[in-house]
Image (cartoon, rainbow, N blue to C red; front, side, top):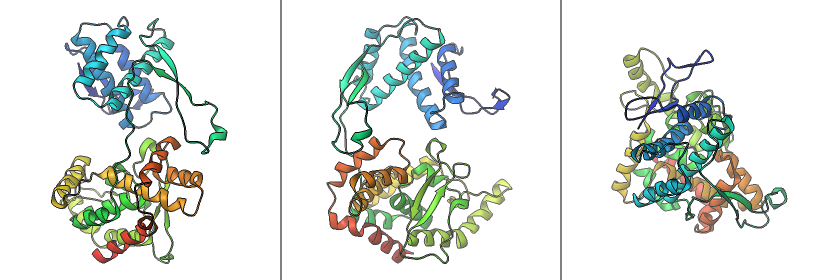
Amino acid sequence: MKLFYTDASFMVAGRPRPNIPFLCDAEMELVSAPNDYLRYVATVKGRTRSEKTWRTYGNDLLEFFAFLEGNDLAWDTVNQTQIGAWRDAMLERGCKRGTVNQRLRCVDTFYDWALKKGITHAIPFSKEEIWVSKPQGFLAHVDASGGRFEANELTVRAHKSLPKFLHLDQAKTFLESMTPYRLKLMGYLMLLTGMRREEVAGFDYRVLPNPAGRDPAKQIAMILDPALTPTKGDKERTVMLPYDLAAALYHYFTFEWPKLLVKHKRTHGQETTCLFLSEDGEALSLTGLNNAFRRFSEKTGIKCHPHMLRHTFGTYELLRISRVKTQSQALLWVRDRMGHSSITTTEKYIHAADLVQHDDADGFQADICRVLRDGH
């Protein structure tokens, strides 16, 4: 079983639809049921507009259908015991419990879709009602579930882990070790705004506000327009730029970026609106960004990956806003800045913030910006 992706020649309703995953079996024959479902996920389902989400669905179904193929099982006759064996095999291979549960849920939704489409008459899963305790007070008045949820019986208990973040001194040391300067700026952008690595790597200069004439004591709102710069789920959101960061980015854009743009035009014959380019004028890959962080982790002895800077922002920003607002208001603020689709995702920073020195939180942004100014 192998996973492939459509190219621009694949048309749906007269429109090119590239990057939709599809499966082929060992004989390189298309596997119709999962492929129809993946096409539905990519072209019909309203909550799965991201190509990254499509890839996740594709990889999850690849794992399942490869198991079926390897054990000569048919997807429409497999039973819950056999799927339980697939689950146990994944755990024995060392897959994380969260990953295993994600794959089980994906396969579960595939069968729900197949049942509604009438291409199967049974679902090889059973559900159980579970109770989940929730923190008292926060949005309790709008929670109609009463803590009751239906869960797939095959899912395993996952251990909730705190988001990994850097403390103030670690963040300053790590970022100051980074070279070249544009890579350092990317790190500051993740740390001070909570932007994702994909959003920073594909950052479009047209969303960058000009800090000229602005109050240096105030943050600057920057709208991430998905029509210009990548965002998760293609959702527009507003992040807040500290003045010093906006000034540093605009200085780089004015004096350093044009030199890289010349190299890009020389190679590709056209301009780009991507703000961060390599020394050769090429777009930066996520793999390259991860490798750079790995290199500076080894150099400093501070283990850090790009998403850890986003977690650091979420932890410190929640604590900072909680000093002047209620916790409910602070959670909503951080949720909107980070682009979380659910407040539950944001709530994980509550316990992480308990590990932070409160006096560090008061000066976190100011201290980071001071290092940024001094290092420029």
